[in-house]
Length: 397
Image (cartoon, rainbow, N blue to C red):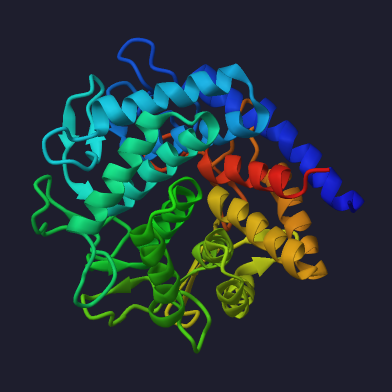
């Protein structure tokens, strides 16, 4: 193994086990109300009364399940099991199925909408818990949520998945995942984070319908979601798959490149994997338009460079490294290894907090962003933790 890769692997295992995971074990466990706190501010303060988000809890479940599967430390299993109980005992809707979007501090359902993105992450976490433990309850609930998505969200006439529904699976006026998003019925982001858990679920449950839908999701990315002119992903669509927004998300481009490749490889279909390879390379190369050598990957571009958000978000840097290391691993792309190494040096210099976890971003003006959460609804150990574990697992000696 190359010295640069060995160095990356060793340093990432150290950051994972000494910086990222201990923060969540030592700072985020809610000993008073159970489960985990809803938020820790950018300055490291626990925000009392903050709602508990299902995406945060599902990502904690995935991260610590994966860490236990790879490193077999009992404290990781304890955290994963705590998160599993949160998902099944509190977030899962025992009446209508699916998972609630958020709970109050004392676990009372707060926002009961069924955001399909959230169901996807619950499947991702539960399926990873099964991979680590062979726990049948986790698999049972993952399959239930898969069936909920297929029954209520899948568009059998026009293909794809709708963004969100009411608690009772009815039409909802505001389908947005967050305030930053457009209120459209179909989005790249939700489809990406259905593809991702469906691939993980397929590793442990070789169901014919799951296989069919995973293949369909891959095809949706190549035929509908990827813009064949720019090679970037279009982000928002109406019911008929028309896109009227000119926004580029560099982080999602490169994250999708490796997740799409992973899905094809997981299916074990050599012809499909070979078919998908040019798309994988093109997406990552398109994302590289936002890459600044020595300074990380920018966040977004709006309207043909009319407006560029040059903040370097923690998750975009993490996904950039996985995407570039995927190109190096499978295509011996030396430039991608260099870019991954440069991105890692940037992370170490600007984003890793010596007191635990990573800062949200480095702003375009060069200042560290301590305004946004250190841990919370969207700031989870999944992107940076997964980056470390992908490198550890892919390049083991």
